[in-house]
Image (cartoon, rainbow, N blue to C red; front, side):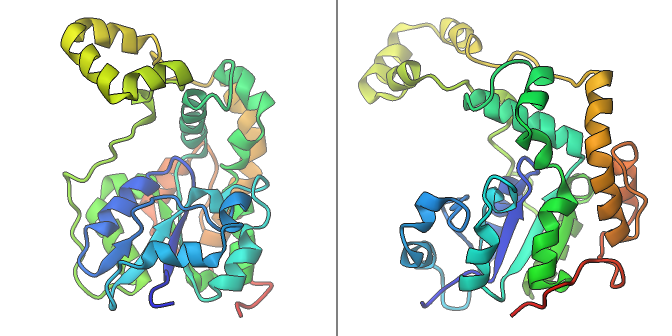
Amino acid sequence: MANSPTFIIMGAMKCATTTLHEQLSEQPGVFMTSLKEPNFFSDDENYAAGIKAYWNLFDVAGPTDICGESSTHYTKLPTYPHTLTRLRRHLPHIKLVYVMRHPLDRLVSQYVHEWTQRTVSGSLSDAIKRYPRLHQYSLYSMQLRPYLEAFGPETVLPVFLERVQLNPAAELARIGRFIGYTQPTVWHEETGHRHASRDRLRKNPWRDALVHTPILHELRRRLVPKSVRTQVRGLWQMKQRPELSEGDRTWLQTRLDPDMATLGHWLELELSCQNFATAVTEHTPEWSPNAVPRLVAAE
């Protein structure tokens, strides 16, 4: 193939991977797929299309472009168990960027997203018990371990959303150095995250068909006052971002803190849900050469 990716932003879900994807696409000489989340190596139906379909995503990249893509499904164990095997087969020398944020904040954002998609139901308190994936995707060391062992820690860059928010230009430059970008990176303030979960409408096939059909869309715009359209839209929105109760936070922390401690050990940090934001912003995240798992050398 003429072009193939040399790096992938592999997650985690709801950690501003879309923002980083868009910021990287703004850099001259960096090509990011127009399909932001191909999820090719994770989703069975996508992988069944054949590897040529994946290479085609990079057809329009320039001959000297650094190519990348972003797929948060790649770090969604145990939902997608075959991702790593497929990646090693087709991209054995890939570089991987893994973005993390406070595990409880990430979980709540995932709940809001899945609520709009109708893949979860009930209250947040009910959902965390019914849908284990809500906290499993926040088990960062569990998600990372297979990649560190298979590819080696030097090929996996840990990034924290809290650091990106504090100093976006510096974190983008750090990612640029990791992927081999030799030009200065520029953070574009106008390139923001335009898909905040709180602004999403809950899916409804009948409403969506009415809203997006061109003729009906134009009639609605002309005949229905904007104030009425806004009021109706509000019926389909989550009015307020849900918050975890103290009991739910405690229940989750008992499941997340052991994983946080492992991640902290790899990064030479004391890490827990309680001190997460402070710990990750005070130290540049780097793998400890003596602590990080390295069971299988990259091929």
